[in-house]
Length: 195
Image 1 (tube, rainbow, N blue to C red):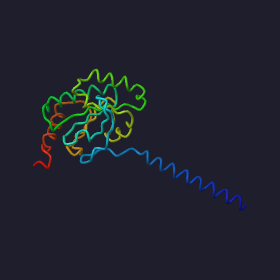
Image 2 (image 1 turned 135 degrees about the horizontal axis):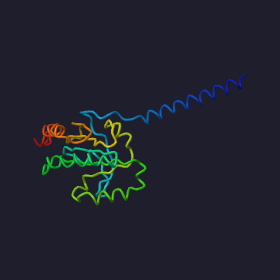
Image 3 (image 1 turned 120 degrees about the vertical axis):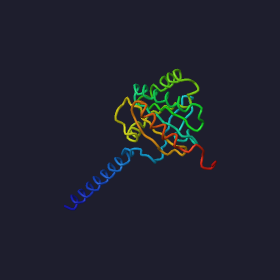
Image 4 (image 1 turned 60 degrees about the horizontal axis):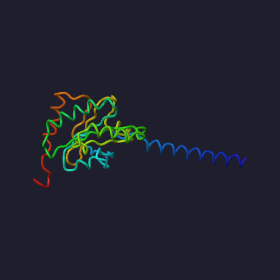
């Protein structure tokens, strides 16, 4: 009987240990919270079309930046439309920039060279340092931006400190562009230490 009790205790402890491990793993795999105004943009790591690694918001240090994420091939239409309008409006401004971020699934890593080469070929060379491809980690970023439509562009405006100031997704429109511009234009134009 003592051997049976000991075996039952060992099995119970093993079960509890396995359960605790499973709960811990599930907690580690929990989706990050959705971005909100006032949050600091979490590190988004990828590779610029120049071939150099990049991390946002570090790449935009000292500038306000519109970060436009696309999660599907067809999302490029909305991403490009937003980028075109934003660049036209803020062309020549040195304290405002834009990053297009194609979010590729982990499986796309196999075709990475071909994908990046195609994007380099179809993107003007002066914009290669403003397009950053990300391979993997899509689930976390989908949670952060409130992903709901694979073909939407997901937009995050950050200030010069990397703080989220505006969020949106979907196609560009005059009303949404005016809303974005109002926020951009309200941001301080010079760093606090230069006032």
